[in-house]
Length: 216
Image (cartoon, rainbow, N blue to C red; front, side, top):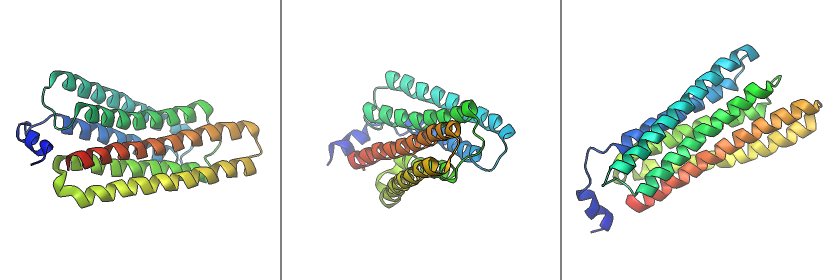
């Protein structure tokens, strides 16, 4: 019998960490949804309100992450290694933080319009958060969710690869087509933040894969 299986006998069934991780993932998905909305075809007047919602989600994420840390300090037996729980929470929170940072740059720079590649990246980030959320939900029943979990992870990786291609094309397009130097600088920084968000989603997927390999 595997050591992890033996330890699971002594692990409380009604754990608090998985619901908290699921809650944090929910916040990430909502932030991703608002990000996609921000880069949709809305006028400049509507941007501040969407950015306000994203900031609110970032605050929620900080609160849930702090609660996870508090519970780790107060709990002797955890469903996974403390380091794995904390790293997963940190990575999800980083996704939320970068989504908020991209939104704040939109507010700060107030670009005239978004290039199509920025819209595509925002959509990819949102889709990635959905996949991460599905994988986090599967932590409740790792052994039974082998196929489903692998599907989520493969999709996270595929989305990151797509994001890399979109980012490269987007940067080349900006330098080729944007004649206004100020707008070029604004949009380049915003697109870079979106690409960072996509990379963080992929980093979160890697942490989930590590947990799956260790405990499934």
